[in-house]
Image (tube, rainbow, N blue to C red; front, side):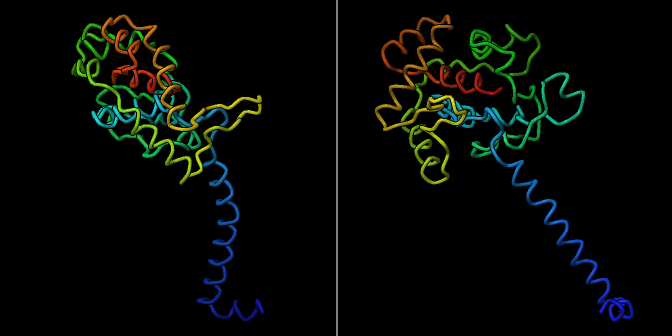
Length: 227
C-alpha cells in the first residue's frame, strides 16, 4: 500500500498532511480545552462587582487600560504574574484591550487600596502627578444599577452555567452567592458597606447607609477583585 503512495507524490503528500493534521489535533485540542478551564481560585463576579464592571465598560476605562499582562519580564516586573487564559473564564466580554494610555489593571487589586482608588477617581493628579487621566466626580453621585447587574449574573448562570451558589474550592461553603433577586441585592448592599467603611467621602458613606450604592463603590469593588 505504501509503495503505491510512494509512486504517486501528490497522494503521498496528502497522506502525510492527513497524518500530521490528525496528530496535531490530538495533541493541541486537549491542551486548549485544559487552558480554557477556570484557573484555580477564579470565581464568578459578585453582583456588586458586576455592577462596577458595567460602570468600567460604560465609561470606557478599557479604552485606556488593558487587562492582559504578556509573558515578558518588563511586564511581569511591573504588573505581576502574566495572564492565564483560565482567569478570563467568567469575563463576558473580555476586556483585554490593545492600548495602554494608563497602566494594565489585570492585577490592580494586589497593589491598590480602596482609599487609593477613592482619591484617584476624584482627583487623579493628587495621586499621580502629571497624569492625563480625567477626574470622575460623577461616580460619587450616580447610583449603581444593581438590578441590571443581577440580571447579568442570572443570565450567565442560566445560559452559560456560570457556577454561582456552588462550592468551587471544596471547603463546604458557597463561593459566590447569588440566590434570588432580593437575596442578591441584600448581599450587594452588605458588600458595599464593607467598601464604604474604608472610604472617607461622607456623602458616599451616607448614601450606602441609606441603601443607595454610588457607582464609585461598585467600581472599587470590581477593581479590588482584579488579582
